[in-house]
Image (tube, rainbow, N blue to C red; front, side, top):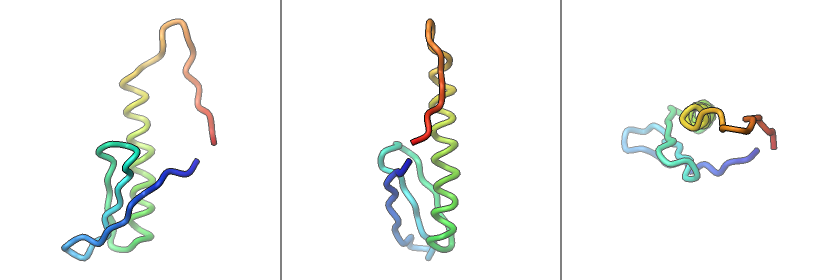
Length: 67
């Protein structure tokens, strides 16, 4: 799965990573590489939280699909 991420230089010299497809999903790092590593963790956490919020569907089954 590929998810677009925006990298921007922060005022403090850190690199800010934002995933516009997932509202509020942000991270940062000292380098672009670190920011990308951190945003991947943030994306995983964001998706886990959203899945937990929705819970198990009534009458259905929740499965994960890799793209």
